[in-house]
Amino acid sequence: MRKIIIADDEHKILMSLEYSFKKNGYDVYIARDGTEVLDFLQTMIPDVILLDIMMPNLDGYSALEAIKKDEKLKDTKVIFLSAKNNPRDIEKGLEMGADAYVTKPYSIKKLMQQIEEMFG
Image (cartoon, helix red, strand yellow):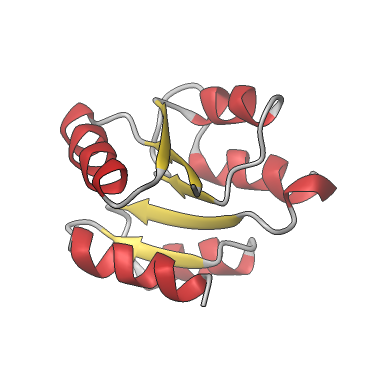
């Protein structure tokens, strides 16, 4: 079973993503900010991290920086899922090492397909 951490501070988004990923056989972990993501990473190595950028305490960019510094997470796919849809934001996210950048609003079905394709 693939493990996914979903990090977002919007409750409705967390609930719909959690439901969809569990239905598709994922082991789902919920984080409400970047700090909670890093807490999970102390004890587990997920296959995928869905990361919002604008979150309290620790934003998605800072969380991604910490993730990229950790050698044991080198195979973990990180996808930004953000309302920041400016081309500069998307470019910044990808340059920082995100595997993909999906803008809100998004299609859960397309997001699921994109993640499945990452694992071939």
